[in-house]
Length: 486
Image 1: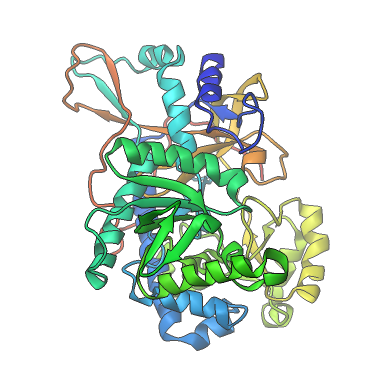
Image 2: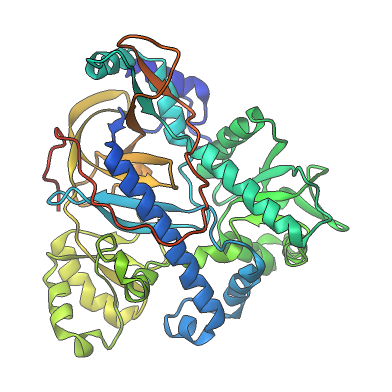
């Protein structure tokens, strides 16, 4: 573990921007995800992606449906969303936060992240550190096969999956904007508000993209400069913006001249005009942010009942709820069966899990912020044995965790903080990665060697347009401990 920490410190991107080099994120040993569980994860991720795209198109066709759900706060937000109607996908880069239900061993969806979802870099860094550590020798001892064929463990790198999606989106975007070059210069763009988290991630992603042969630049939102029919970053034209800043940050700088200055407002309005005119491809589009509204989970369940095994019961706290469904309201205010989440929130903020706090706050939130919070069915998390390092100290135990897929790839977060705090955020978790087993894969190794494919290709297109995939009940490894915190 200490050798892993030394490598992560040297790398320099496994921490918040501006922190001392030694202050890295907490990290853990891998989750050995069974092949059936990985298949289940991929199928559910595809089904949610297709359902989310369908729901977004529904709101584009039916503005009244979006209005009744309070999806947009004003016409500007709706304009951001409606601009995306001509793009091939509303949310090409997305991430699910999945729990494993302790009693059933099946996945349950906690949240959808599709504005500017992070997390692509950290699992790759931890996996790389693991590869060079003595812990891999333990894996070889544990995994040695009794046959003459080696056992394969695959690591799917989220950066590779994102790159494939970016290029597919750009190719489709370029059909409507043929003046753009075939081979784009990719710019990873963050803002001052998000740089603390996103700048190290952007650097690590850019290094990977560059190693694959692509021209990549990194900068801030205000480093972009509209110039004629081009967008420049530090004087160089860029064609594909990989957004690592929030829609809210963009809008503030487009409107608030008193706070940010008229020069900033003019520049950001020029960027917005360039986006509207198709001079640059933005991934994820600005309007994708509104598809991660937690209130949409209620709507997803109604329009896509086949998602019921995955999506927990989610109820918007509307003023009329106690009268329309008194039994549901009574169950929510008991505090045991539901938790509370603000519809627009991120990084584990504005989540109420402790039962007494749920009982106290639910009536208050219904009265003071009607329609702005959801009650979500409480999930009992399964646990798994991990070793974790936090602030230089090593702990070993059986911890709750989440699996956060982008598609074929994912990362893992290990809960090591407050038992009533969310673990799908840095401050309450250790960063980890998943390894997926496969036997009989041809390799140059012989005998009982163990091989890890650290940059495994994805077996099929990650944005495959197809019918929904049937639910597959995953089975945890036989050694997977059951039981977890409520």
